[in-house]
Amino acid sequence: MSQPSGSLRNKVTALVAAVAATGLVVGMVLWCVITRAAIHEEVEAATRVSEQWLHSTAPLAFSVGARLDMITTVGRLRANHLEVRSESGELLYSSPAPTYKAGRDAPAWFSALVSPVVETRRWEEGPLRLKLEPDTSRAVLDAWDNLWVGAGWAVAAIILLSVFVRHATHRIVAPLSRIREALGHSATGQFDRRLDSLGNAEFDELAKAYNHMAENLAQTLVRNARLEEDKRFAHALNQRMEDTQKSLARELHDEFGQGITAIRAIAGGIAQRTTAENNALHGSAQALLAVSGQLQDNVRGILERLRSEAPQAPAQLDEALDDYVRRWASCYPAVDVVHHVDRMPDDLPEAFRSNVLRLAQEALTNVARHADAERVEVKLERRQNDIELTVNDDGRGFDPMARTERYGLAGMRERSEIWHGRLSVSSPPEGGCTISVILPLPEDTQESEHGAPAPHTQPDR
Image 1 (cartoon, rainbow, N blue to C red):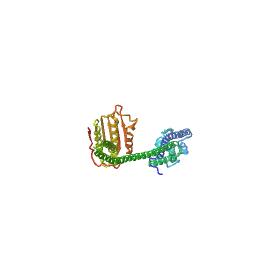
Image 2: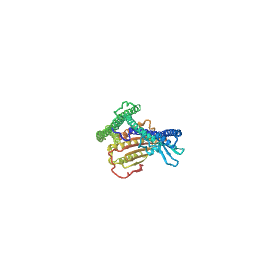
Image 3: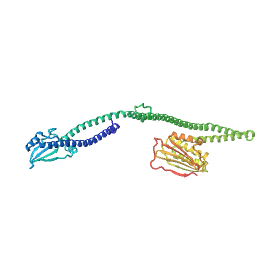
Image 4: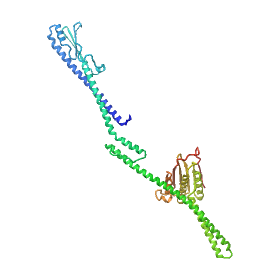
């Protein structure tokens, strides 16, 4: 598998190579300093030996010619260049060029870098003028050759070190590919893969943490699936209850209504025929009419409650909520009701509209039964991707954490969760209560009207 330029293996290799190269440069600088001192010591020693030999052999020559023959016989002095001149400055003798590595010289910059400062010796021997000049060119050339050999070995060592580090780093970080594959597998929503030991204490800790995370996520998926199933069941149950209530209302209306009407008709006929003939039967017929009338009123009340508990969701949510709040306000004239309703999309699903109406109905029912409030404010506001229903009252309040079932909050919370909403309840110590429900709009809902919504706020007194 190819490695990207920014991979850890390449970075570690480059770092080690850079450190080694820096060490090589520093080593070369130190070597140059040491070599310069060594050349100076070597040449200076050779110059002193040559100078001593020339001084010690001078008395042995009895003439200028004999002295020149003696010097010529010796030839080139080591690491020095000798010139002999007459009193008039005529060159009588000059040392031959060096034969060691003849024809080669170190680069000028390198010679300037490592060549030491040496002193030229001059003295007189009678009519002869001798000049002994130290020559560092051969020692510098040796240093240059040694530098090339050493640098070559150093570069080879750096290359071998880089290859070794690259290979070693690859072996060390190889388990990361298994971790990456496991994470990629988890990114697809599958958490069934587990990592075994990776042969490294640090990586084993990562593998242990990944396995723990995958296990938790797998359990979370199971819990979420169960929760979704519970929500679907609760939704279906609520829908079934509403359907049952509607069916029961129809049965009561059709069966009981017709039966009671028939009883009242029969009792009315008996009462008309027995007015003057049988006072006892006439009284019984009148009593039957009264009882059947009371029974009819009771059935009518039951039908009214059943229909109010399972209202038909109209086509427009904002109009339906506005109408319901007005009717609720008319039933409780002692309560000051203010409502604010934004315009809602026209294509909201019927189940969603019914759910919002039921939430508002339950909240207002709790206010009527328990709050003893003087003022109630109802808001239905449209956001970009959700709506918020808020019911606020100034009643006596309650502790939201204690016995919430009696206020119907459990049912409201279930209705909110069915549509992935959030319900919050706040009741400060000084009284009052605010119930807020935020419901995300269904994904397939689209705004049918463009522009800002047209809310209206008004008291319902």
